[in-house]
Image 1 (cartoon, one colour):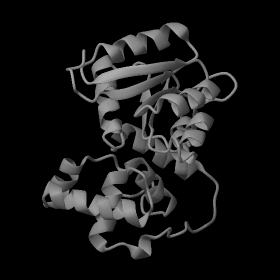
Image 2 (cartoon, rainbow, N blue to C red):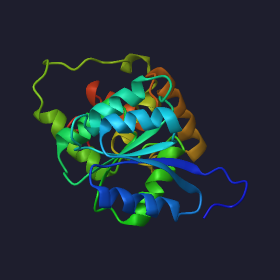
Image 3 (cartoon, rainbow, N blue to C red):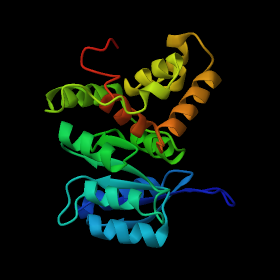
Length: 229
């Protein structure tokens, strides 16, 4: 339950399985500080309801009939009316193409449906706060995905020449899935310093969150399968 006067994180649930959709809504509504604002059975309905309800976070299934979750995410993030809404992708399928596609579309997080409820609720809060939820295991799969993709011989620097040496260090660690605190420990600096570097990186890459910084790090060639962790 939410405390009177408290501003709850507004959550829209999008999944084609009615039972799971209802269960997720009940889970969200039972958690203090969160409230469900609607349910969608497919991507098309998710886009429509998001425009109507303006949720902070959409729990978005990947595989849905008609408009799937990745296309729905792309449309939500591209529309100025819903661009502030964060998308947390949910799937039963731990496949590289889904992870990469979801993040490219603008998703701020990616979780499997067997994620424990407490972790899912934490993930909603993390994404709502403007951060990205990218576990190290997911970033390892992304690196493998990029290694397998055919492409030009030399990756585009994609703005790396505009970064300081320390910003490159931070970007590489962000791409490895490290938190600000973990990066601070690795680089022997304060957490506030890391936050400043991340803020500068977001500005330089015109990125909405850490998820897009991860993509930028991979596509620029800063992080490769042979890069030390």
